Length: 181
Image (cartoon, rainbow, N blue to C red; front, side):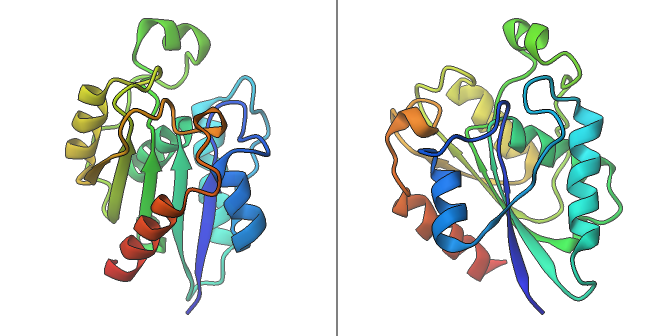
């Protein structure tokens, strides 16, 4: 059995300096490509994740590494899929609060956020000064999803602009999560 690590970027994809892109390049993880990164539709993104998981060999499983809107994608997928057993664990970094009024205008198909337990081991990494999601909301998502909450301090949206580089701290947490799952 092989464990495949799937990278799930958020809205507008992850640029070259984003830790997800650096992990993909240096660690050989697989990015789940979307048909539309600019005007994403929740149903399309859920279907793409489902297709990717079902394309894996039947005996294999996956670990999901999601950022921002990718976290909301994972929650929505887990609430609707009958294939959640294919996922061993998920690292959910800086979930985007798409229920905020300003976000509803930009990403209208993404609210409401699925709040059910995910059905696999998960960790939510949150920043105390994320402009896309308050710490209170990240904490609430983690609780509802049955995830462990990890605080990253004041590091913004935990993206390329946060200057995390290849973010060894999160790599260690991912490895720990994979070992525990």
